[in-house]
Length: 167
Image (cartoon, rainbow, N blue to C red):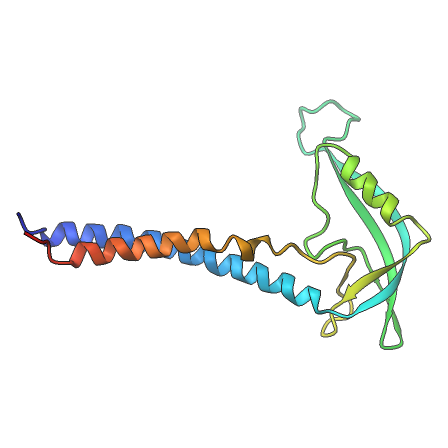
């Protein structure tokens, strides 16, 4: 059996390191997202009064028929007290409410958080101006295995490139 040339070993190592690097970047980003969601779950809950609750819309496509919204989302404004001071927020989640091509999801949230009602919101104790009605999803943490496959696979390619070939 022929021995691998140095050039082929370097080439395979670069491919493996690229795969591992990309997987590593995505794993880190997903871990940060998971930890941010975990942090929000530990923020104190305080009562908040809903001042405004409505379905917002936007139209990004200039070719879309005039006067017809293209996407919808839940928009809210509420006040809450933290450490004897009143604060205001417009965040449903840290990243805001998701946009949708139908208004039904936003309409459900308007019914869940009607104007004049009292709800509970999570307040960031380190930055009291930051509050959310709902915590973030932890799906990134549960899916972390996927980019880690690229890390392990990429490092396996590098190891295989330098392993002596058996006869």
